[in-house]
Amino acid sequence: MNTFALVIFVVMPVAGAALALRQWLLLRSGVRVSARIVGFEKFETDPMSESSKPTLHLPIVEFTDENGRKVRITLIAEAGTMEREAAIGDRVALIYPKGQPRRAKYEDLKAMFLVPGILVAPAVVFVVYIVGALAWGKVFP
Image (cartoon, rainbow, N blue to C red; front, side, top):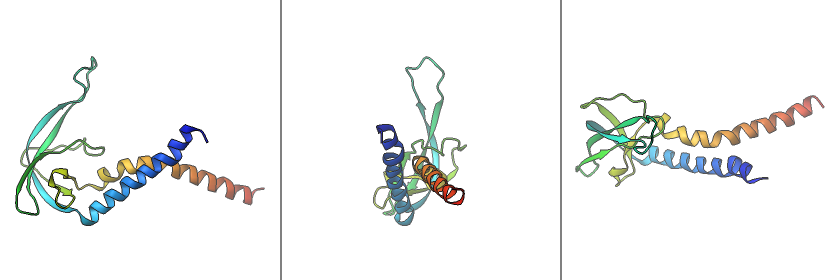
């Protein structure tokens, strides 16, 4: 098996499964909060580029953590969250690991499981292909 196949069919699915497990554990034991958007931070995707790269406006949110302390953070842009349209004053659902409110992220299944799904998909397609080929060979020898 060459290196490319090893990465596509072993390394990526293992990383995807580990990330999916981490997200699932966060959903099971994370702290859920409702946060209010208080502003936006402008983020240049590549300020040195000659081409016109998009500028992201990352929401700055405030919420109260599980200990009653006010927390103010800028949410990072994750796959599946960049098409959100939001305004100052909007409320968003967040989730974070217990005791780590600065690691809050959108509580959104699509955003949380998009990257793990992409990492695991090639191996799933390969397994389905092999099983199908083997079954087809048994039905039509």
